[in-house]
Image (cartoon, rainbow, N blue to C red; front, side, top):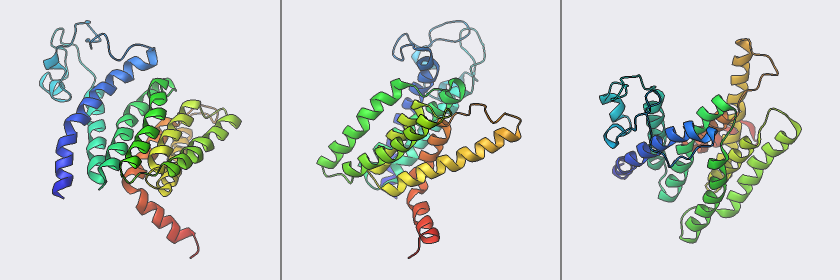
Length: 260
């Protein structure tokens, strides 16, 4: 318990910093802009935001959600994204006994709030997030395995092929699935496959179930059957479900539906 609390405290500043970066990514990546330069500016008056006004969550609260220079309101989306990202990072690091596993899942979950926001708004999952992830996560798994961490590269490869490959087939025969979804599924498959293939199954099943519920809600709200519904947020939600309840749900499924 003490170890989990220590990990949580250590990872909190990192989670907030990543969340702050992701708020920049949400705005700039869909527009093809650099996430490194120029420095953040007020969207209303264009004044460059000073370091003291760029502290995640805290600065927004101290400024009461307004620009110091012009007083224009600053969307609450910024601190909420930072908080959501930090919460997922801290919870993941504290959740897994293995630090190798905890860091890997924390890095995966750090992306999901931004991915969900961008996909809802722009119907894309940025390649500038997915391509580096498709390289970094397999490399991380191999390095962790070589150094004795409880990560399994063959299972990670199976997870990639099963989840990413499965959605690739769907994308090839359906107009409702984009290649961004395929890439995200592949990354999720690598990360959870390295821990246990049951978690990959839970992530996939949760995404499908939640996506189905979301589709029914959209129909009930008057959207047509042919309306495009982004699947990225449901993939992201499935990853969260697998991260925190994957083994329990996998065992429940096996006990309930698979004959002994």
